[in-house]
Length: 180
Image (cartoon, rainbow, N blue to C red):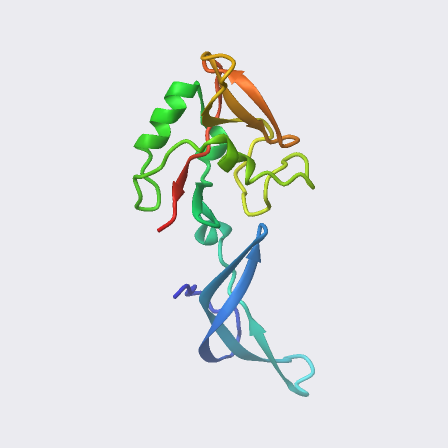
């Protein structure tokens, strides 16, 4: 139950619990919230009572998730997905050592998995709307580029295109895990 102890009404009436569907940054998040039903007296006119519902404001950070679940995969979507730049080998190690949302079975996605979150109807970023921590830049995949052992596949989320990049270059990292 999420609630706030501040009562914004002058004349509190009663508190009920409701399931509220919130829409934040493209995500639908159902949370039980405490809604304060209150009556406020019009002090100047004193003609009638006004009944209204005040939804208690909740910080976006309380609602934000660190992951995105799409089909059978769970994707890292915390602030580190927008800030962590590593070379290919370090990116693989980073994902294998990641402990997020109580799971430690994270890995660097293969190129098909990374392409599956591209939304070609969008640019800047060309990624599904479920994601909130995105750089319009290159992200590593675990798939090696067959023509050169010194390269691996990357997705450029500015347009959603796929390229090969030198394994020694530093690109962004978004880890993935299989959902149970």
